[in-house]
Length: 161
Length: 161
Image (tube, rainbow over all chains, first blue to last red):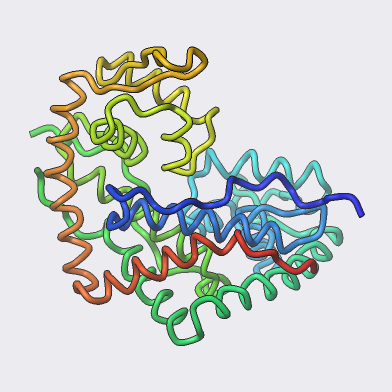
């Protein structure tokens, strides 16, 4: 059988001793590994986590505006545009001008996009079960709680150095 | 006083209900917030987390090779090169050909790089104390343990979907 797994990053070596207690660095390493696993759990053609999140949200909220999508995913409009262009090119999703606000675009999945979401969701369940296997259900829940707390860190005013 | 804080991402809204139990999505949100806080804790000129990690490791290991640095930080060589070029342009670090292996470059901090690392380390301590304040010491430790576990997720063979 041909090797269809995408080129994955190098296996993770031990964290750098200077940075192993640095939360930002450890978050980034974990995120890269988790994203790579999400992709590796799919069969080809594979969908990146960012594309999947966009397709999932459009599928759940047909007619979603681009700005609402940016807010939901904490991504900049400039980064969303090329991603939406790619989804359009692949026949997965389309933009239609809003009937109520001409400056706004509404987003919809096309049938191929709906099929793709359903397919990736199966892979996602395998991926998530691998995380549960690694951490256990209770610790995974603790992790999600801490990650949610951390995502509000930048809301409070930092002291100057 | 002029506003010197860099343009930061929008304040984090509640996570999307469809994705709030998705570990990858929650990791990414937390990582963006933690990186933004690390930058916001510094006074201008600010140093990005990736640049800081590179400078810190070169400072601790003078003569470090580019490939060792890539391994330590799990980054691709193609992404390291522009970063090193920027550090050179700013007079913070230099590359010198290895005396033992002509194909390899050794990395060294320049005095301005050493000063910058010392300055950013102060900001980093404030940043880390903000995380401890948010999570508590014990939970922060639990978080680091789980992140280290997750960073090995991609080493094990995933099932196909």
